[in-house]
Image (cartoon, rainbow, N blue to C red):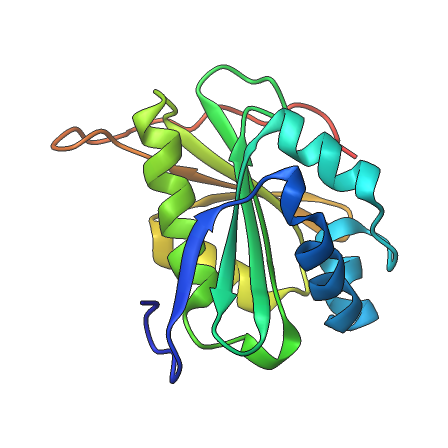
Length: 172
């Protein structure tokens, strides 16, 4: 069950077999939500294929609405010890804790694979995403024009993280 949700949703690993569910999810999302996550309003099967090759992916399933969120984490930027986070929550399910639950799941996954930092690239105007990242820890934010490269340290249990690696030039 996810936090603050009035109706339970389950998080499970996504595979390419989930493409029809993921495609339906994207078709229900607004252009603004798609643009914030993907930089465009149309998501193709090949985009999901690439995401699945580069990272671990999860979907949040709602009993009646199907997929309501998609999350991913992996070493996409190829920076040692850094896992890149991707999140998208359906418009009707935002602000219910689903994104935070997926982000915490992704952070635990990254930690279990030796990552020390979770990174997210977001529009500086995407206040819900930035707030979510701040709830994960004490991020460092690097401005890149209208975007922020946000780094959240992932200390191992009982170990404080004192440094966050500097970002590489633009990842887009």
